[in-house]
Figure (tube, rainbow, N blue to C red):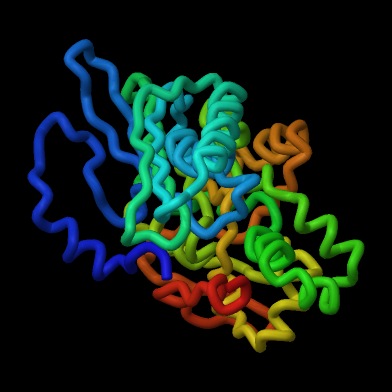
Length: 331
């Protein structure tokens, strides 16, 4: 389920033509692309799907998924295109409701919806959306996952696996109430706006010493760190005991008998991973506290290409591929 692994992705995109005007082409760990415009600015573009999420949140998440990827490159998302596709006999009122929520999300971010596509198709049995977001910036303003440097600290914002726990509370409500308690299940089922890192990413992008950022959506911490290391040609060491993990995620781990690797791979949309020089740590943590965003320093990027993880059992090799349990838990 979800995006292709690094090996498969490299095979699929091998045929894409290269051009001197493309500064950041498709690649592993690069959720946005960058190309030059004739007037010397750079256009940062990202596209993302939205599928399998509750309809009352569909439009909001659709816009924020793509907008977050542009923001992680340090660029304010300004415009987007939106496509909504549904199965036959999808009510017009559902398309209207989802689009209204997408418009509200775009308005709040200062974005303008430019174009899109809407329709019903026999091949679908549920609604599918895509959003392509883009913004303009000078080259010096752009930060990519390639920017992580040896010696940089690894910052992790928001609790890991929260997206999975929230979706579980929405899709498997009776079991969530039994495992978490009714009050916690109710609270989690109403949460969704943490699944955006636009504000935090744009704030950090303006701070000296922040070299690279990546979200921890599909594949969680495992995908994010491996993709940053792949893009920046670094290694890293991460201490999983320092990562914030909600009580409910620990409960899910026990119930579904998850390994530590699976916990580290949990879908965590909205969680931001950043590489920052040690001298910037205090400033960054203080800035994030102004957003009331939980953030912790959990490791270090290294010159060595080795990737290491520490947990309660000791130190070992970091998993080279995410084992995201989202589907097993939530569907």
